[in-house]
Amino acid sequence: MMLTAIGLMSGTSLDGVDVALIKTDGRRVSALGPSGYRPYTEAERGVLRQALAEAAQLDRRDARPGILAEAERSVTIAHAEAVAAFVAQHGIANDSVDLVGFHGQTVLHRPASKLTVQIGDAQALAKAIRLPVVYDFRAADVAAGGQGAPFVPVYHRALAQSLGREGPVLVVNIGGVSNVTFIDGSDTLIACDTGPGNALLDDFVFRTIGKAFDGEGKLAAQGQVDEAWLAQALQHPFFARPAPKSLDRNDFAALGLGDWSPADGAATLTAFTAGAIAAILPLLPKQPHSVVITGGGARNLTMMRMLRERLAPASVESADALGWSADAMEAQAFGFLAARGLKGLPLSYPATTGVAFPMTGGLLARP
Image (cartoon, rainbow, N blue to C red):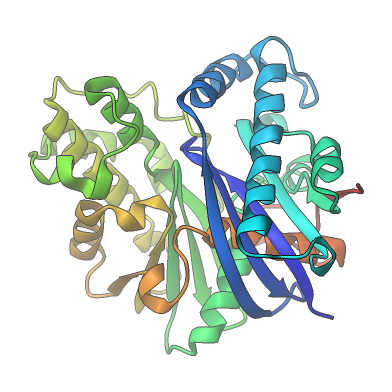
């Protein structure tokens, strides 16, 4: 039976809450509905940045000391407001929606310690929006020894199969962290994080010119790549490790950056993201014929140019060019995953998160 789900996603780049409507039975996607966005205010971003810093000390996933309690309230309210505005704007009746997929905001991801923490109060959200909420998607996988990421590959597969293309397809999601899904027919599904996405770049741009991100890659387009720094950074042992593998947003934060101008730093860190993505190609069973870029990085024209250079001869297209929504992809995915979780279908696999056997996940909060 097809379900109508609203998916919600707040990514590691701390920009805001994405909302999307999807009709799915958890296996196929029958329709993609409208999408929306509720940006975080500067004050909310400030609280979340503090929460990310303080979360490094957590050793229990349910603990909310200090600023984390305030951040959780903030995340919950922002998501409730995002849903209320979305259904009002698009004239969506509450009783036409079957469930909501709520990822929450990741503040710590340490699978080696079997610890992943997403803040956001699903029970309070369900009451506020008067809809059933599926949440806590990653915990079961991490508890079973999986990396707990990436979680969108099963959705990428459903979309890629609808293209009917020959040869392997690689879907690259560039959020705070970059991850890839390698799809070869219905049998082969491999996924992993590849390294920094926009996180290092966004943090650098924020520190140097006070902007949240490099819009369309315009700053990077004016700079020169520090090739010596780039070559050294790409020697990091993470890049040679086979899939599956995953990262925390801040795993590369300790990397010593060069004494760069804002433009040269943006160019170098954009090239680092592209190089890290290209580094996965030798580790795949076949070379992809086509590459689809989604997430915030798909809007960065300098990033797209660098990826075309590094991933040739594969074609490189943005998700939007295929009628997919680069902006709404992860929100749609969590609507899709909510339906899968509700039906007890696997959300993760040995070749996506390294879990020993296919794992379902998600808990249900009722209004």
